[in-house]
Image (cartoon, rainbow, N blue to C red):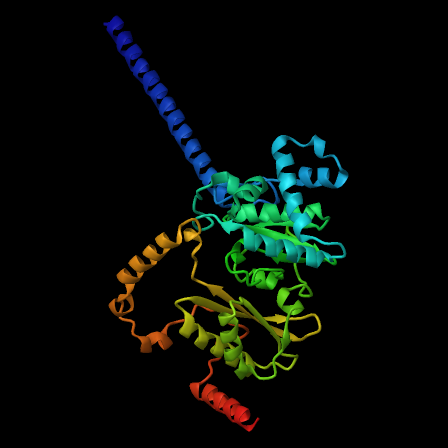
Length: 396
């Protein structure tokens, strides 16, 4: 009887030990799962968190911002033999471009402008938006690939532009958004920094993203303003450098129409210092009304810039929707066939979508307005202004 009692006791102890072991094992498994989940969450959060650095940042989970300082330093120090083959090729291509577009006596601003003009004309956006995987892969994100293929994603534009600037001893940084989906450049001219985003201007070289200050750039992007230098200057904004006087805002429609006819993408006018809210509202209404007429083919936006001398400069940016770059490698016969097929299929598209010609004036414009856009202007004011202008012309 005593023996059976001890057998029962040892049996109970065995069950307890096994139970404790299973519990410990289960706890360990749960700990590992929780730890794994935490690691996964931390990893996901890390992708969305900003990093306070310029290089070795991955944009859109695909393209890495890589330094090319070794190339520009080798160029300036005459130590090109120290470069590997790929970097030598990159430098050779970059030198040929600078030899073509840079002349003696150019200011830093003129050099920067020459590079901008060359890049928007010769480098095409890779297929898709910034976050879409392009056809040419990572090569579209490096100066070597960009200068060879003449196509680029935003990282490719930014790093190639920075290489050109650094080769010319112009201080330049590649900036990225806090969510790491886009990148562009900051360039230093006469002690002041400016934002330049060639990717956004490629295809429509209207200078809308050339030498912006922080205020203008923040309309579209958010970035680490604690890490990257503040851009407060307006002296070298393209509109501030290139503008003409505008004594009558009601002349603006004819000027914009002529610009479109002449295939110009940019207009800028100095409005002086006496610019009240009413004049801003009138300009907004004019630009929006014109946009309603040309919305199928063009996008118009306007921006009011405070120049260093307190003058107000109005810039009008025109972008064309008629992108025919996909047909560049096709014969005229094939291009004509494509156009006929598309025209035939979409000839009644406006009617199908319920849009008649008289409805065009009701289309909401996507234009960026200037100043206080909440103040609307009545149609009567525009009609009166147009009548005044007609009378003035007749009197002349």
